[in-house]
Amino acid sequence: MIFHIQNSFDDFYKIVNENRKKFSSGVVHSFIGTEEQLKNVLSLDLYVGVTSSTLQTEESCNMIKNCPTDRLVLETDSPY
Figure 1 (cartoon, rainbow, N blue to C red):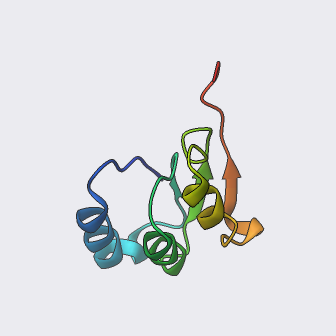
Figure 2 (figure 1 turned 90 degrees about the vertical axis):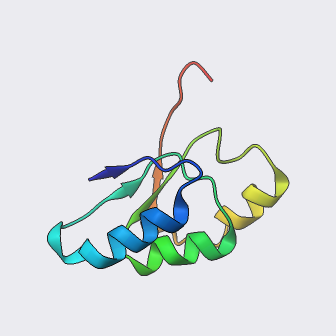
Figure 3 (figure 1 turned 45 degrees about the vertical axis):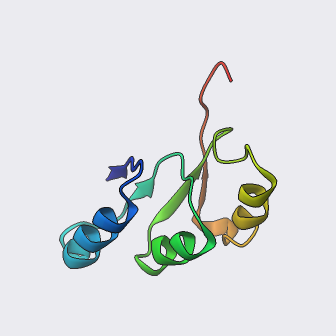
């Protein structure tokens, strides 16, 4: 399952947390969030999609360094 969440992390987390056993896997596409939100995504055993949008700030770059490499999905927002 592919999740694209913008400005709705709390709702996303609540719904997915309640229904996580209903699907086998998922990717949070083009993840932009906080360190705490990253930890919450990982606690759901989901993958984290990284694009150029994810890496626009130093804070985001530092945050994504804490994501295990086996949970990262490199995405493209071509032509960017």
